[in-house]
Image 1 (tube, rainbow, N blue to C red):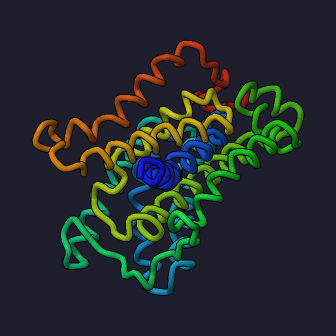
Image 2 (image 1 turned 45 degrees about the vertical axis):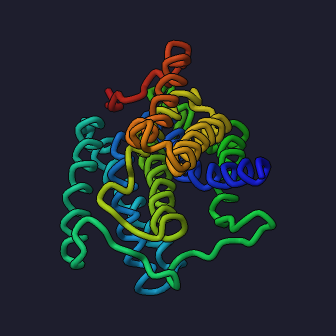
Length: 299
């Protein structure tokens, strides 16, 4: 019985780590290129909502594509404002988060179910059957993607351009690298992965949309980026740490008698507290690109 519970928590952890890992590894690409996007929470919320509508209209494939497209559009907007127009990255990210909160809350009310909308099971992404339980195919994407991104960043010319633009855009510009275009495409790619993460939550994991569905995961993804030190492989570890404690908290809160002793709100805080403690332990030793957050202006 104990082994069964351990496998159950492990599978729950794999599903819970997906939105954190996908969002964090995408943000690693964006920050490596010199742009930081704190609007990840808003992208997760928007893409979860639009992905659910897309899935209901044309099936789960369309839902996933719509979620990715939503993230891509927001990422292109963010990159255009900050790479080409030299805007304030912090304010742009906050604006995305605030827009998403209002848009999704209004959208859910317009659907006639204020605060909550269920995605029909027929429109949800089917799980891959295993001896222990169903596993979403996107879990495998989240497990594989950090390795692919690590290879691209550190073993290809494209990765060299991205790292050069984030570290020394002046030198990259002199060498013929299109700085603004690299930043635009990098942040758009990162936002598209956050869009995939949002669509996953509504179409492949939870099967519903609420105005709180992101639940701070965008900010936890940012913390995971700090923990990783912009190493895509470590985003996998950071995502699993959060996913494990998130699943463990859910499992503990459902044990008979626990709620009467410990309020469920305190149990739900566990994954966030653990994440903060992990980040606190490494934040002083992380080195970010020199040009991160600084708009590049040719002289």
